[in-house]
Structures are given as structure tokens and as C-alpha cells.
Image (cartoon, rainbow, N blue to C red; front, side, top):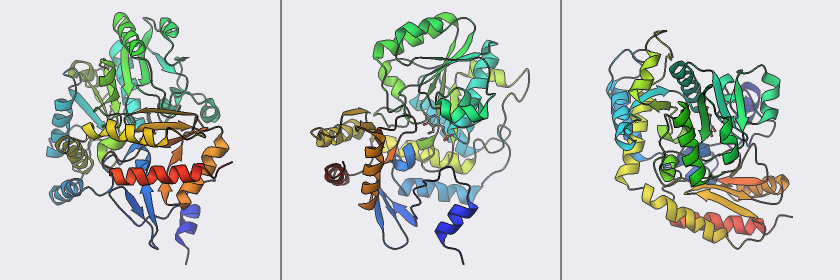
Length: 396
Ligand code: PLP
């Protein structure tokens, strides 16, 4: 009889020789539990997914209710079903009026694929402008507009007509032209190490796109759903994208994504050709029911108001650590710079042994990542920071 670890390593496709390999039996609130009584405090929310922690009773109830009603009944876009309708209405109620039409998909990368296609179809142009350091996902289109060359090289040729400019560099905005279909950008660059652009830069980017009829696609797959203290980070820059991509935390723990736009733009997927973008599982009723409950809980529990004070608390607790070179954060979206990638791996390993889950960034190896559940208790946060300080003191 094979052990759980043997099955995992032999029969589940591996993406890294260094998988964390933690065995998880159940999870509740901000805590994960192993099969032999191990306990781990989740400071990473499954990489930006579990913004309400694990097993929130209202999300579980919504899922149970939907299971009793129905699961998949038809491919995307044919039948009227209550769960996707409720989710679309709730998104409509929290978003600016021009973001009134949601196309539901199954993941972040898929929402990027849909957004790129929509922009090309709507503008009749082919050029996409993206940013150095960007991460938008691992499918062909999403990889094409991502910046990390070492992850792309082996998969070329990728999408043609993609141009990369520097993030937060006003000078490079001149490269956006009337040949450009879309500019795609993470409102806050995540994988590059939580890079926060200037307010004026985002204003200028929006103005340049508007001036040239270029669609602005904002990727809020990680920065959205309250992570930065507002529903979406773009609200803090007083801009509105033409297309918004969301996923990860949207589903409350179930897989779902969406690209969202004005119905006037979205309707060009309906004709020339008809079925311009299709998916079997997009808008899956179970995922939609969970996502709708997740948004409802954030609203009912006024969670957005807790994000900035909790983020500030973490920052203040870690501020006097000499081994921390810089803390970048918006709300509870954190990158913490140490002197080297080795220090980051050493620290993450030590913290895991103490029962604290943190993580790293693919394109910013000297930073470690924390993104706790938004509803984590102050007591757990203080405990986590105490462990981080104790283990930081031990690393070379
Ligand atoms: N965009 C951003 C900013 C992300 O952080 C991610 C995933 O980490 C994606 C897109 C891709 O999402 P998914 O892994 O659901 O395809």
C-alpha cells in the first residue's frame, strides 16, 4: 500500500522538484490541520484564494443548498440559472456602472484569455501591450503577456504582436498607439513582488488608452476581492478599466474566474463569429453559489474596513526587524524583502516547521509573501508576527 506522499509524487503531475508536500486533512478559519494533529496557521490563503479563511459557514451553506438544487445543467450561456444570475447581479452592485456584464470562466488564466480575445475582437486590432514583471497565468495567451522570460522560452512561439513596456514608467506610455488593441496590467504587480504604481501613472495610463481607443484590461486576479482594502485595487487610483479580470478569491474556495466589461463591448462575442468565446463549465452553478456567498459575507461582515488596520498592524509589528530590507503592501497584500533568495527559503522552511505557512514569489526571489485571510483574528496575526521575528533572528 502506497503512502499519501508516494501517491502524490508518483501519480499527481508535479510542477516542481521542491513541492512543500504538506498533508492536509481539514481546515477551519485561518488554520489547516494535518492527519496526525499537526496545526498550521495560514498566512498565505492558498495564494490569494481563501480571503474568508476556510470553511466559512455561510459559504458552506450556500454550497450545500446548491448541491441539493442542481449541479451542471448545460454549457455556458444557454440556460437561465439562479446562481450565476445572483453572482452577476452582486458583481454589478459592487462595480462601476460600465462594468455591468460578466463572462464567467473557471480560472484566472482563462479570464485573461477571454479578455485578450474580447479586446482584439472589439477593436479589430492585434497588438497587446503588457509589462515587464507581469504575471497573468500559464496558458498560451496568458503566458504570452507575462514577463518572466525563463518561464516562456521553452514554449515559443507564443502570441505574436505583444510588446512589453516598463511598469510605472510614464515615458513608456508613448509606445501605446492606435495599433494597440489593449493594454493589460495588474493594478498592483503581484508576482513581481507587490509593486504598487503611482496614482498619477495610473491616471496617465487610463487617459492614454482612452485617447487612442485602446482597451485597458486590469488583472485583479490577486489584488481584488478585498485583498487591498477595497473591492478592487483600481478604486484606489480613481480609474475604471474597460475589462476587469478576477478569479482566485472570487470563488470563496471553489474555482471560478470572470472577465467583466460593458455589455456594449461584451456583445461582440455574440456575433461575427457567433459563439466568439465558449466554455463548458464557465458559470458552474456550484462555483457561482459559493462566489456569491463569498461576496455577500465580505459585505455583511464589513470586512473591507478591517483590511487596512490589520495590514498596518502586521507592518508595525515587523517594522523594527533589521533583516527586513523593505515592506511593500497595500491592505493585506504583502511583499517583504530580505537580503537574498536563500534567506527567504530558509525563513519559509523554518516557519513551516513552527506551523506557519508563508510563501515566495516566482519573479522576486528575495521577497517573501504574506496574504492572510482578511478575517484572521488579531491574536493570530500577533502570534504569526512573533514567530516571524523569532525565526528571522535565527537566519544567517
Ligand atoms: N493573474 C494574476 C495576477 C495571478 O496572480 C494569477 C495566478 O497566480 C493569474 C493571473 C492566473 O490565475 P490562475 O492560476 O487561476 O490561472
